[in-house]
Length: 57
Image 1 (spheres, rainbow, N blue to C red):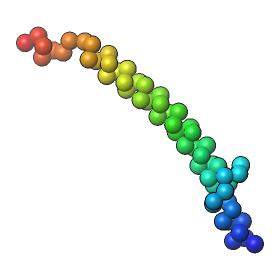
Image 2: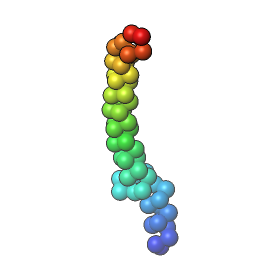
Image 3: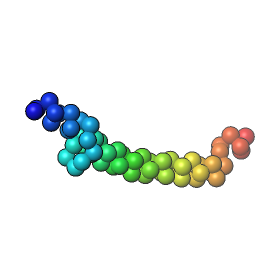
């Protein structure tokens, strides 16, 4: 009985199971990653638009 419950918890996608918890965690991680990627891309783009010190030598 407990073994079957453990298998269902570890392999199911129903709410409250391991995979469902992991899926929620991955969704949240994807949101944070998107924020970081946007900030990084914006910073790189802005950094490239400013002249560098070496260009004045």
